[in-house]
Amino acid sequence: MARLLATILFLSHLSIVYGQTASPSSGKPSFTEYIRRHLPVKRELDVFLNEMSWAKFDPEVGYVLGNFVPRDGVDESATISTSQPDGTRTSFAYCNQPCRINTYGNSFTLCHQVSDGETWQEYLAAHLGEPIRNYGMGGFGLYQSYRRMLREEQTDNGAEYVMLYIWGDDHRRSLLRCRYLLIDAWNRKQNSQEGIGRMFHGNFWSNIEMNLDTGKLEEHENRLSTHTSLYKMLDPDWMVENLEDDLALEMGLYLRGEIGDVDLARLKRLSQHLGEELSVENGRPTRASVDALLDAYSFAATKQILEKARAFTEGRGKKLMIILLDPYRVTRALLDGGTRYDQEIVDYLKDKNFRTFDMNVVHQEDFKSFNLNSNDYMRRYFIGHYSPAGNHFFAYALKGHVVDWLDPKPVPYRDTQQKIIDFKEYLQGF
Image 1 (cartoon, rainbow, N blue to C red):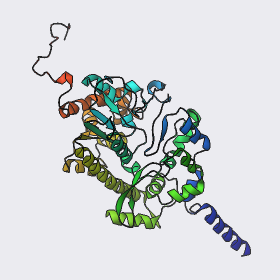
Image 2: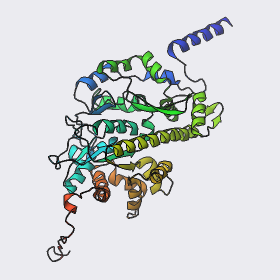
Image 3: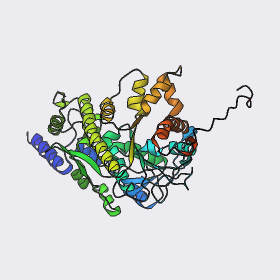
Image 4: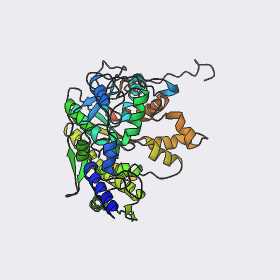
């Protein structure tokens, strides 16, 4: 009995010092224990802040594009990924001409896994005869893209036409205070392949999250907005203190099976505010129920962000286009005859009369032209992100919508009275 009591006291001491221990029935660490175990090392931050790397520090949105040549391209090639002093990705097509279009979003806007001249913006600019600025950045959520849009559109680089791109889990990323723990395994892999810190990102940024006392969505500034303060990410106590109530992060780790439990009381409060059901079995919420609740939470945030983006652009005489693409949760489902999980957002955009381009539907129609299964079809365009061929396909799918949008029309589309040259008697066999 004395030994048992001593063991209980020892475990109680550990729970105070290190946070809740592993869930006894799951064998997985608790949320706070997971936070303590998955911190960056100092060398990662040193490289990120002081040396050439894929991303560079930003006090508001965490990071923006840096300068690097990661080996992540088509046919096992490296890709040249560089940025300009104004923060845009390096461009070449008509970059000495006035710019009417700025683009914001995550890695599918940035066009990760291709070189600077292979982005969809460059392909489209080359056709339209005018430049398109690329403010995309890998890992961003919709909120971080929106915040960057607010900042850049109030500078001399502001444009009349603004594209805001929603990809994949951008809805969920908006809610996070820090994404680093969700990409820890990927980061460690890149540290071994590209060098420690060369691909570092996912640090603290500005975010939007729900106040569970009021049920209101609130915007928050970056908690680590200086180079010096970023080193607090090395302090396990500070990280626990600042992340232990990040419910979106906790839900994300629970869904991935990284932690054994989740704060049920806080989930119930969230579900009540959102009017969503929460299924509980054996004292734990089901992962399917948590997944649906996280979607509902993130969609609520997305709707608020979209309204704020429209209010901002309309208030400054700008025009806004929303772009949708989720190749892995939406496009593939549509190709396989299923339904899309984000139908709520699609309906919202339509009901609220947002100008929208939905690339998921383009792929669904294009798929009908091939006698392929969905996996083989996806390989035509994707290598994780779009390949150069995928970006080219995207650019020309978007082209007509952009031409209709712009006023005046791009130079190649202005003189509609001039007849198109017919090469019927010029090209043999045409």
